Amino acid sequence: MRFRYSDTLMEDCAEIRSEIIETCLWLLEEHLVIGTWGNVSVRLADGNILITPSRVPYEAMQPEDLVVLAPDGTVVRGSRRSTSEREIHRGILNARKDLNAVVHTHSAYAMACCAIEGGIPPLSEEMAQLLGGGIPLTRSFVPSERHEELGRMAVESLGSANALLLRNHGPVCCGRTLGEARVCAQSVEKAAKMYLHLRGAGPINVLEEQWVRAGRTYFTDAYGKT
Ligand SMILES: [Zn+2]
Image (cartoon, rainbow, N blue to C red; front, side, top):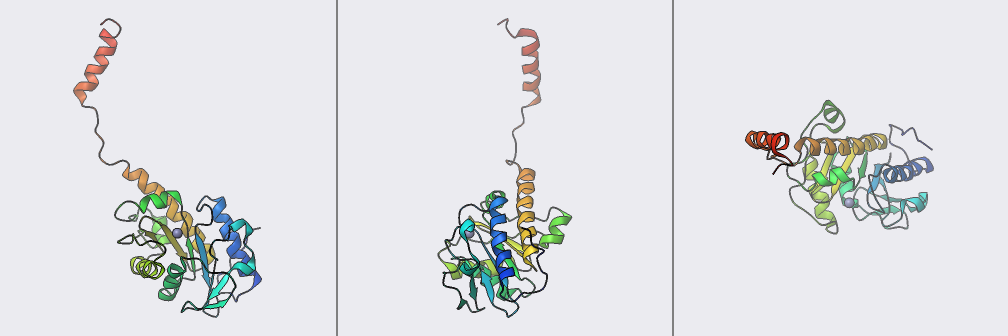
């Protein structure tokens, strides 16, 4: 089942909860996450945040497993613990009123870019349009269990961009709607793949011309005779 993804903020209802669960299953399908890694949140019409729970496999996730947080982080509804990465979502949604959905993935190419310096520079018009340009990288590694520090660093690094890379961790992808955040997650992974291809392995030691000629001559004139 595919949803249309409403472009207005929704009240907490069955439809938005289903959209989040469907997004989680889509993340698995697209290989943007494995296991219970990754998490999703949206801003609701009343300003609260609907977010995925901690440690519930996506295939088993039920609408009532999702958690509603107030902007200050207190639990409004839900019996589950919200994702341990909630401070990334809360920090971004509180700081950026133009964004209403956050998707954090552990996709392979973007994670590779989380392990090299410099983030991903703007490489295409697509990146400019969907991501607002390049993708910044947080300046230092913060382990996930240091929730608040990780959230602060994510907000600081995001600036006015729509996506960021958490150093040695994974990408955070945002949008005005959940649909946009999903496209952002795909676009970030594509940009990371392009960047790694373009960067390559760094400087390459090409065989010097004299050795190219010597090798060819050896093969045509002397191979099998010495
Ligand atoms: Zn993560």
